[in-house]
Length: 455
Image (cartoon, rainbow, N blue to C red):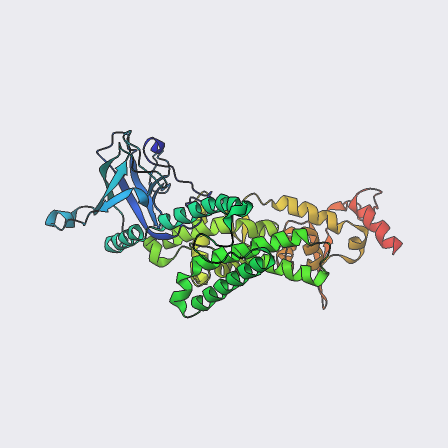
């Protein structure tokens, strides 16, 4: 198992890696072997998908190309001590490209990850990436160097340690009377209401500066994307806490604006979207997996089915500046049948394409529609797509498709008038072909007779 030597990597239901809070995917390579001959307990990792982030190297088994039972594994970039330049030789031109790098491991052969010190018993070993698939090796190597030199994991650990250390220290200093009016930096300590106002003012000035810097140009916006996401998350948490504590004193208009702001903050977007630059030839495959993870919440809110046009708008809004084309979305959805994902692309007889959960049952929907059309009012006047939409909790366009499907199954009959489509329960199944004028005292036909007679 990979756990004997390498830290395990967590993946989503569609096979996409679960990233850390500040982790961003940089590059993808297919059919990659990860080897280390110096460690006897190093797992056998063959023909997998390699994902490079600003924190880790992630090796994921590719179910479409391998049948091995290797588990997803990770190599923290904090454990990489050196990256070797590729050898230029005539033999290297005809063999699979190899990228060698040096790792720091403990005395028992485990890769030392983030937050682990080098230790007295640590040593260095050489690991090799054997790239058997297609990919730009030079571009990957450049991204590898860039991510390793960036040391994003250090800024994360420093911010976490500073927040954990400053919290108890500040509380102990504020609680003691000997701290005085001066801070450790020699500035005047602001206390009471004036201190709170000063702190809020500094926070808003910092926020305003971040917004001004972010909107200078597109490059500045991309560099500030992480900071904007963190700022939005803080604002969302503040709104949620404020709505819970002030529900009694807020009016309806204020609560409505807060709800709209919360919905906007909740759809802040995808921090590390799959792009053609990072995924290369694996773009549509990885886009399909990321889309399968993304549509779970929209499908839950839409009753298990959502229009392809609607998901195109929602998904592009979440991707921010990394927009995709309708062709890319359709191609990504069509790849779902090759993967083990809980969603599927469906095309109705009318040509409308929708995304739905595989657990979505048409029979359950038809049963709810039949219950609706057998109500006394519906027996007399029928139902419209809007009536079915309110019952099913979906959009009217989707409700109309369900009604047309129920009609093709023989459950409903359709009446077309200048006012639009009206659907009625199909009573022909209740008639006796040998005695068409026989009125039964039970069944849907009898209930229809009573409803019409009462009107």
